[in-house]
Every structure is written in structure tokens, then in C-alpha cells.
Image (tube, rainbow, N blue to C red; front, side, top):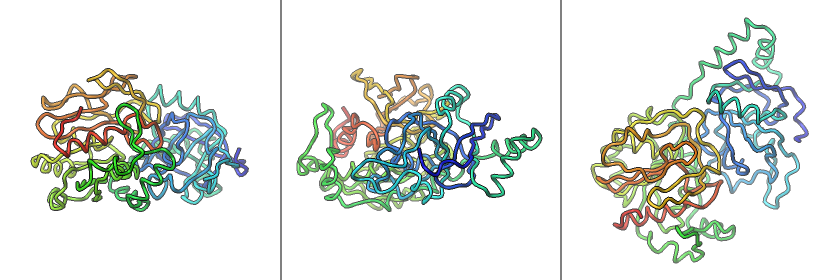
Length: 410
């Protein structure tokens, strides 16, 4: 247990439920969208994943921070979540790569944490009631004192709950675009570090490509534009490992600006928020689709591509978040374990004739992948780059290289 976690703190859900525990990290109040992640590891990557922008994350696994914080594992330059909730944070990590504790990392990023609550009970509430807004109350400031006081008086509590309910995640993509660029490394260093930790490219048959020359052979000489809606750093790393030249552009880039770079392929990244709110991006993507350039979309990129082709998206009850989400490839029937972080999904019933489902979630049968017959493009809802998570589906980056080289996805 973290040594500085004795100060009172609480999570106030929009439905009025209160979970009292202890504060760690920054001592302040934060309002956000309460979600849960089922990952057993990967708190570093979770906290630095831009897709968690505006959210209060609860880890279902009880022990978090055991191996500490390691800057080379960041998926962007900072924490994007509003707050972090764990059952038991570790203040004495055991790992030769450890640089600081979880509490120190939260403190440095001015992000409050809550521990010592029954995270299983909280997860059950979010699972049954669905994702809802919440407020993490900690610290000795006026806002915290006022919130704690409101919890004791029904009339004041009603006003506090209205404040919590009124919170809305806005300008999410614009707020996080290009942040991962701040932690990026050159191709040779990326492959060398990947080889050191056996995170080299994995073929579809599960074998690893340990030779840098072999891994990069098919992609050399090809340029990919990474359209950054809140990209995780490992997307670029996976592209670099395959020999591709990667040029990142912001979410605000126009179709004209992207096409002027003469890309051989375009990567549509993950990102936070409601995909349908990205009206300008969708309209610019429609212009790009007319040029028939090979495209690969991940998570938000998958949803935005579907919207540009005429499909619809809707919000899931509690979303898919964690590194243990099962997806089935319909062409083979094989099930892969995937890393996921999303609250919206493409509605399968809304798909245009040119779109074909390629993956489905085996838990709830929601759409997890699409390919298109009228343009060289495919996309997946999950994260084949993982980080954290299993390497089961990283071969999809090889299929993207194949598509760039004129071959259709398997």
C-alpha cells in the first residue's frame, strides 16, 4: 500500500453512490467519465494512452504499480486520464527498469488517485448501470471541502450531482493529437529495443521475425502518413519495424495536405471521444478515399473510416477496455486475444454494401473489423499494436504492408 495514502478521498458517481477510500498521487478534485479496464498489467501504457482523455479509470486487477513506472514504455508524453482508481497501489516496486512509483507518476502529472475501495463493487455498478460521470474528491482545497460537505446534506448533494452529470468530454481529438510524437524514436533504435525485449514483428502463424533486414524488407521505400487522432506511440513503432517511412500529421490536417505528401499508405490512428463528432475529419477522409490509397484504421480510425463510408456508430453500455478481449476472425473462425480501449462501436446493421465484417467480439458480438470492396482499405476496432497486451494480431501490420504492395488482405 502506498505510504502517503492515508488522506480521505472519495468517488462520487452521477447516480449518487459514493465510494470512500484514501488519496494518492495529486491531491485535488477531478470530474470525468468513470470507466473500468480489465488489464492485469500495463498501467503505464493505460495512463499514457490518449484514448483515455477525459476519463476516470478503474483497474479491476487489485494490485497495480508492482513493477513501477518506466518512461520508455510511455505511449505518449503524459497522462491523459482525469483520475486513476486502484484497490492497492504499490509503493515499493520491484523491477530493474523501474524509475518511479505509480504515486509519484500521478503526482508529477497532477492527476489524483483513489485507493482502498472495493474496485470489484465499483466495476459491477459500471457494468450493470453503464459508463457514467463521476467526481474524484481529494485534497484539502475549497472544492474538496465543499464536495465532502455536500455529501452530508441532501440539498447540497443534489447540486453536486448535477455538476457531475453536466460534465462532457469535448474537443477530445484536438486535445491529444501529436502528443505521442514527443516520445518517438528512430527506426533502428525502435527495432533494437524491440529485439531486446522480444517485441519484434509476429507473423500470422505466431512465429517472430528476429531479423531486422527480413522484417523491414517488404516495407522499405514506402511512405505511410500516420493521421494522428490521439495515436499510441507503438503504432508508429510497429510501422517502423516493417521498414516503412512514417510521417505523422495532426488531426487538423486537410486531405490536400495529406495527399501532397504522396503517401503509399495512410494509417488512421486511435483516439478518444465520440467518433461522430469528428465531422471535419470525416469529410476530409471522404476526399482521400476517392484517390484509392491503401488505408488501415485502428480503433477511432476504424470508426471514422466506417462513418466516412456511410455506416453509423453508437455508444456501448460500458465499452471494451483491457488487454484480454477476445475477437474472432470470421474468415477462419480463429479467436485472438486483443487489447482494446473504446466506448463506441460501429453498428453492423448500418454497414454499406461495400463493407464486409472481418472480426467480431466473442463476448457481445459487436463489430471488431471491416474491409472494403470499393477501396483498398481495412480497419479493426481493437489494438493490434497492443502495448500493453498480447502480440496475437500484430500481423495485421504486415497485411497493411501487403496492401500497400498491391496484395489484398488475407
